[in-house]
Length: 268
Image (tube, rainbow, N blue to C red; front, side, top):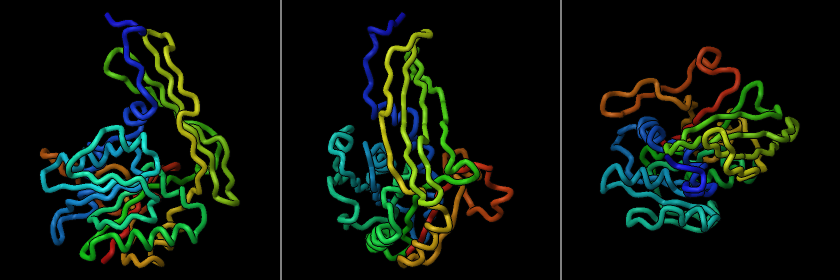
């Protein structure tokens, strides 16, 4: 029987990957949204990459898969070490130039661009990085009736060793007149009903919460030809793990009152 003292203490990046990220489910969605025309995507650019766990899972698909990870946090980029088919860059995302089939901005990080001018500047640079034939830009955002409401979401996640991590996403401040929000992530680890570790304000974010129409307009202005919105769950997954997903056509039927969506923009 393990005891709290015998457990290793995870860092906040371990807990973020455990509670927030799910690259195994996301990668089939990225592949499905990009599609196979003219060929399946093999090069992923991951902006605001954090620990680059998505990219490490991406290149595990085959030896022909490569990734480019961009972030300003050296500790996070170093989390999973080097990989011969992953290029990690400690630079501003606006300075990245490596071409890709898919450019992904996850975990609401598109909100790091606080003004429309900043957003369009970034999207134009993103457009230039994507391959001319069917290059795809993808980001996520949240919306709905609680988008600018203070509050929190709580979710317990088993750690696989008898411990439980209680994850909390808190929106502490939100201004619907400016679109600015302040969000925080907290973790609490429990073992046999005893709290062993607490990580208050483990991650803090001061973001612009962009709406779907605002992002669509900025993407079209930046040169993208087609912008579509997708639910963050596949319509179907076959026995081989391939996902199938269609753009949202009837928001009244397909979106819940408070939602998270993926927005996909194509170069051509």
